Length: 267
Image (tube, rainbow, N blue to C red; front, side, top):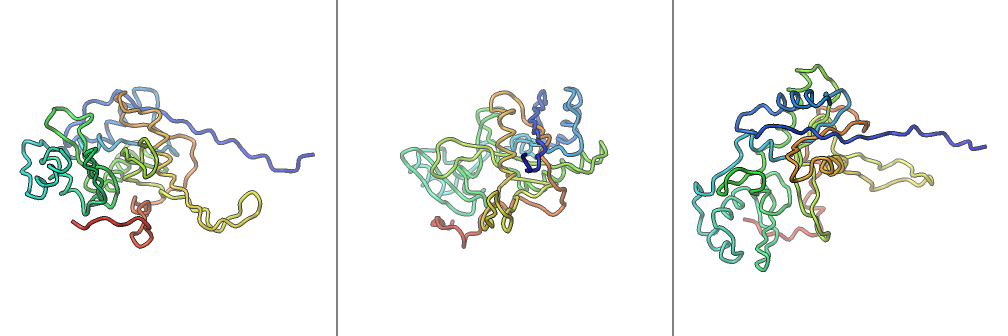
């Protein structure tokens, strides 16, 4: 006879929210997402985690920039010659960062630490899914605040009390090929699940396991959103989490004194 307790299966669903219009400056993302999720028969409910791409947020917050309006500095011009990149783009990359982590002149790559503390290519600036050949999108100034604004709009308009919001961007990963979606802004849930002090299945005490669930949620949602499907939001349904007001994406950033590979040059 099997005396082990039967575990309840936890089914997690990923539900895309499509047919969002082209987002413009000052659009209310929360209201648009409520409208489109209802039209598609997928109303947002308590316990859902709403995942929204950075591009939608940046557009709604007027965080796009025309390169023709950028005057590059002498430093940007010098670096652009080394990397064979547009000096106006390099200027924006420098403005949006605190330090250069690495460059590769062969491939024209520049890895920086953004003003938020994220380590990524081009300070998170890119031209994909932005109208016009001359325009690029910048990361939101405060992605956690952006996530909270979306969350507050939704919970007040449709009377919810248990909702998470994650804002994502696509980052590369050290020593691994390919990119993945990660969390850059969060509201309503903690980005890390801490297993330290708990016992594993064999009874051993876990001493260092902290799972970045916000990044896992971001990556899972990308499977439904994709990069070419014009789907900028998705719901994660079925994942059990505790609601919290005290959270931000800084928990996902490793302190510099714990970073064994922190050899970047200060700007």
